[in-house]
Length: 247
Length: 75
Image (cartoon, rainbow over all chains, first blue to last red; front, side):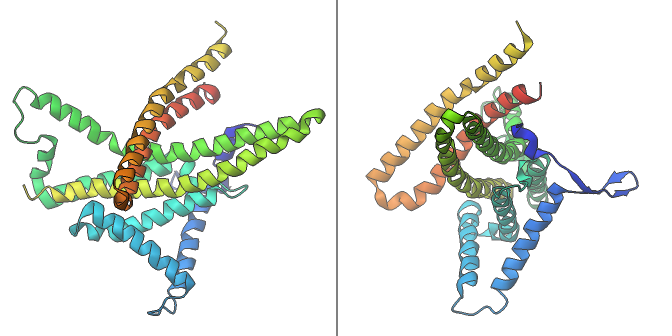
């Protein structure tokens, strides 16, 4: 009963191309399943779209406006160009988290490489967008005007450190939330198993099971909340690099 | 000291960070509830901000959790 055993990446179809590993693992299989699920859902929902939406189309429209509001409040009107990316990111993370809650399923957001990878895409594209739109003025927001000259070196170092830490904190937050939830559920389920193994105490096994039901409800909320937080923070990072051209 | 015992003690010590996280979450939600009580119509704007900062504070707790888990399972 190792709580970490469900996070193992297993190789399903080994594939090698010029010493590079393209194998299909359970992680990439679940990613493909998530994307396929999103595509099928949106395909069915918008196949015969009408002015008065049917039920699935209504769900899709609500999600659309939900992310639209997030992007508009955090990135302003010019940030609306970020909308397609943010929408895709939200659906991918949210559905990936929720699929991981199913019994015997693998949640790919519990792999640090996946979350750090998604965070690095946001980070690198924020640098590229900032350099493309503002040129070398982009580096000005590491050093706001009006500081005394003896503070500036320390300020630049601190700002640079907090800037470099962004993708790490963004990735680790999602990863750790998912891993912590899964491990907690497994440890509590382990209590139930050890209660059952003692005959006189087997009735008490209902307590950890009931608590596990509560934990699952809490984790469902955490899954959506973490996807939301990831989207809001990456929206803020991208908007910051887009918007510093006014001054 | 026995290295296995040291491992368990260390993972216990590493979650002392939850002390600060508890204080932070308490302060965050006390002021959130207070501001919603003062101005209930602002709840729609305040809740998303509160949730974002909740996640930011919680990530500190999760870092402590990762250290504890690393000590328990990977050392």
